[in-house]
Image 1 (cartoon, one colour):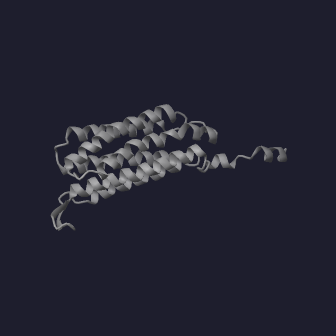
Image 2: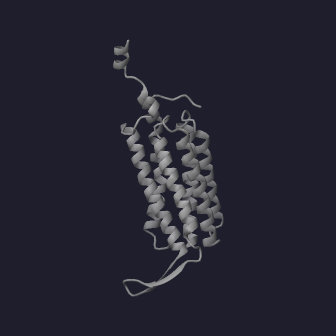
Length: 219
């Protein structure tokens, strides 16, 4: 178990990590939001680029900024899984909605578990543990939602302009991917700024330490 750093040192080391992680997630959300194409190929290509960039960002941030957190290997693994998932998505971008569901579900399940575990492992010892629990649990829940969407779902409807359209599983899952990326990006940005400005709660062990005035009084 890594020794616990002072709370100020933890925040100084950690705050850039969620902010740089938020950048590729925000880019993915914007690309999906402003694109009319929500096909399986589009989803695989956009997630593929996000996965490679985002995975490298997570792994690099872990190496450079989380050396004393006690969970650096788990974040390196999380980055590697994300990058591999992104590479696979690009390689099979013509494989259809089945590959999109499979890659997204496996990615969200593994990375969600790794981040959730990192948060629970450092609970009450590291300033970012709560952020990791929340982000990991959210990602794991998204994996469950992906599983619950029927791959063969298709529903015809008429839009407000009178044009007949089809809402199918690829449209649903790509839209969900964009929503996930947007929520994650906002949360990570808030977490990073909270750490930088010192508004996060201190770990319990840090809070339990007597202040200098209390030590002088007890002496």
